[in-house]
Image 1 (cartoon, rainbow, N blue to C red):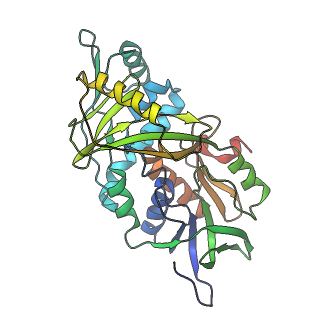
Image 2 (image 1 turned 90 degrees about the vertical axis):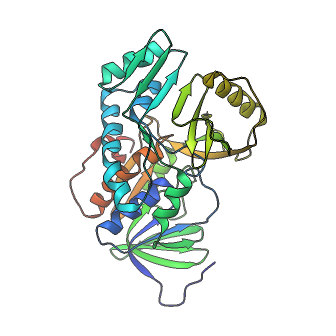
Image 3 (image 1 turned 120 degrees about the vertical axis):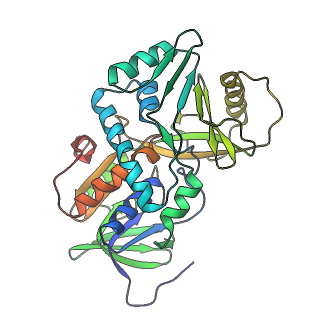
Length: 340
């Protein structure tokens, strides 16, 4: 763990948290020529325990989102091709599929929201070419390349002239702008009341996935109770949504139920698989959309994307970067003021 010598290092922006939102914000700020550092204790975070779905069509249909919320997810998806090219994140997948269950209802929702899709009632299958994915391990690795990452915990923070001073387990750091991308973690000491209130809005949700070395599918396949998606040279089975749960120890019963649902989605007989089950805790807001923007002078949040952290990453990064530059709010639907 690095420890700093005097004088304390100073940056244009300091981000607390190295998940999808934190690293996407760092990437966007760096693209704009800002000196950026990220404080994170290391280890596996919720963005690593994910399938990396960039899936506005399926997510909007599954969650029966409003046209306004669907517009946010669609605009987020539209930023991904240029963001991926600029950062080296591998964006892929040209089809996603839903099999069985309430497939007719999902197709109707996609129609109402204007997402391109094909629905085959005879086979109970719904496909769309609007969705894609990334592989979280690859994305996290390339987004961190060349970035100053301080492997430490943030202990407390305080205003420091026009900016902020953050005490960490590796020493103190100063920055003109401070960005909280702390997932479902509790508030760090020293936050002003507005930021404390924003963090208090976040509810934890545990998600469990299984990593499989065998390549079970060549595109994302979803259905009642599970999805199966490509991941590197193998596949990922997911995912639970367990509000209020903070344990990162996989629950065997829920994992077995998810595996059974995955075999049903694939219409295959169960067979032995080597599966690395993992659990991660992400955060959500009361309305299911993230908070992004300024909450106090020089202090910004990037919190609560629910299960859409990877999809929303570039959009949140742009919103936060705009806020540090004093630009007009581009996505008012996401501004923290709706809860404060």
